[in-house]
Length: 115
Length: 113
Image (cartoon, rainbow over all chains, first blue to last red; front, side, top):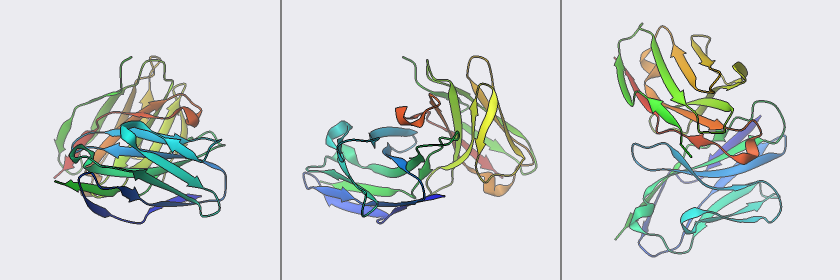
């Protein structure tokens, strides 16, 4: 079984400041890792994913994440946030093997960017 | 390429009623998954359909059922609605192998009163 823990439910930050949204996971099998963003009253949009290879993954909108296998973490970072980054961010994992291929999500982190 | 389209966008039903939600998958995708997102929570996997058959199921009771059609579109049916079924229902399409990622629709907001 897999589980995902997002360590902060809310992160307030000022515009142009750096931000890190933390994600830890637990799994007995190898997984793929994802970060999704959800703007108010919308569905989920894929920010980035880790499948294999380089542990530093770059995504859309200037976000990046680093996979740390020993710490089972996949933290999301952005060096300088904008007001438009205000949204809820979800970390998710998916088993590499098995026919389900379903995503297991964390509870989300609400990023609030203040001017 | 077209994205994932869900209908309706909002719905209000009475406890005990039945509801059908619809999803058109992204062009080229053959797999559809449904998720329930309660207020303040992350999405929870309901089930996945591939080649018109259920291909995996989360921890949801049998009154949650689905269909996938030859054009890969899908329906989610919920019978005997309960107040706790109030949530945003998200549809995601993909290829069967998960590493290609999932494309989500904007969801259907279901309110059960």
